[in-house]
Image 1 (tube, rainbow, N blue to C red):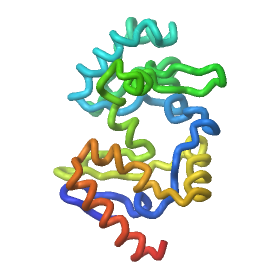
Image 2: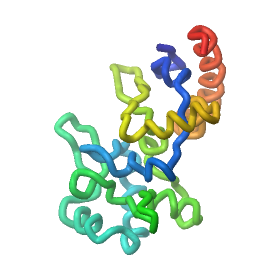
Image 3: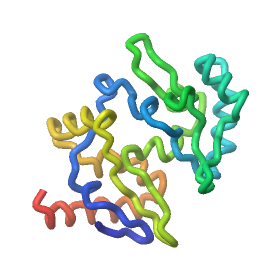
Image 4: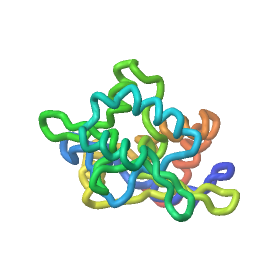
Amino acid sequence: MFQIDNVLLSDDIATVKFACDISRCKGACCVVGDAGAPVEKSEIPILKKAYQVLKGELRPEAVKEVETNGLISEKSNGDLELACTNNEACVFVVFDKAGIAYCAIQQAFYECRLNWEKPISCHLFPIRISKIGELEYANYQYVPSICSTACERGKKEGIYLADFIRKPLERKYGKEWADAFAHTVQLVRKANRV
């Protein structure tokens, strides 16, 4: 484990090789699971705006879910998460002709229709962040049914998870933090002989 400012990170974030391969996994991280993506309170107004912009493009069952039960749900511990259809696909998931799941928010961002890419938890996946007192703990959450193809691609192309998630980490913590992270990652790899 290593620490940068008030963030603890598991060593495997520095040492594991990982690069998404959406053509093979078909966007499983947006579809597989028993809960919606974690959401920060500050993201709720942006998500509500995104829903209004994208409502006409979303799957009918997704619109029905949001209109019936809401866009965000609160768990018993107070954590917030995005709504899903049938406890699986995120309400913002759209599918292309090949059956690959895409985030409608991210697609609208690429098309310059929204100025926000997606929830930070989605951008950081497979990293999950939790609170431990005053600290945040970033942990690599390996789910074989979702992540195995990304690990294969990362190994084949020599891409480390730390490099793959640099942009979302900078988005969350800022450039100075991300620069310190990149430097520390090199030290962790040396210490672990990776």
